[in-house]
Image 1: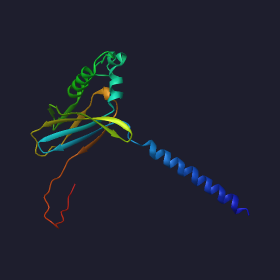
Image 2 (image 1 turned 60 degrees about the horizontal axis):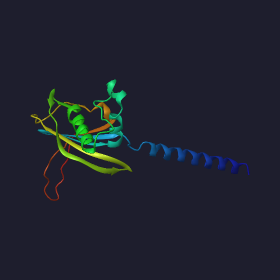
Image 3 (image 1 turned 135 degrees about the horizontal axis):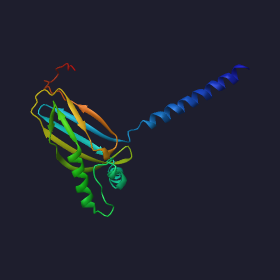
Length: 172
């Protein structure tokens, strides 16, 4: 009979640990802005997902602008078109990319598109730039401070045509 209270304590402990693990797993859900930098031979592309509402609020903070924490100030009285124009200007002018010690001039590749990701309303921006390197060796990226933290992944695709039924081993 003395084993039953011990088994019950073990079950309760196991249940508490399981709940903590589940809570921890959901806490790691990506809620920051994110960017995928795709570095191809001769071309760089950035796909940026931004919580636009949060970004605009940070740009409407006059104190943040005066202290240099943000790159611009957006007045709450601005129209939607003016806000869009201002945010695009901040994004293009304050996103810096250097490949092999060469500064790239970015252009907006695609207008902003709204999407929903894990319950968050995000806006996607696509920036791109050609570069003269067939085999880039280094990459440096800076995003506007007003975006806050950005989770970045860098992708360097490998291309290979495979005939039907063939196996190709990719090396990294």
